[in-house]
Length: 80
Image (cartoon, rainbow, N blue to C red):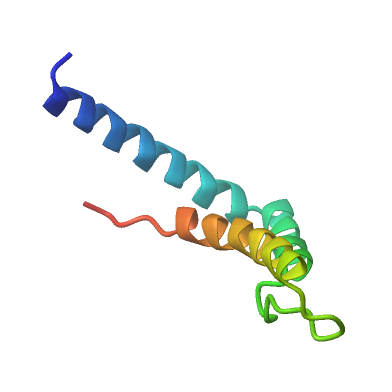
């Protein structure tokens, strides 16, 4: 398989995956899970711990937040 064909296949798989995220989180159960993840991952909060600002806690919080950002990014599908 040449590089161009591989690129097309990868793009199709990525679009398929994004569509799956979109379908999943548009269901009633998906909306409930998405809201729970938003709270748990601290999406709307700063990653720096207000009680004890240390780098490791900040990194941990930002890691959780990044998961939710990935879900949001995967849900956005552009129609070609």
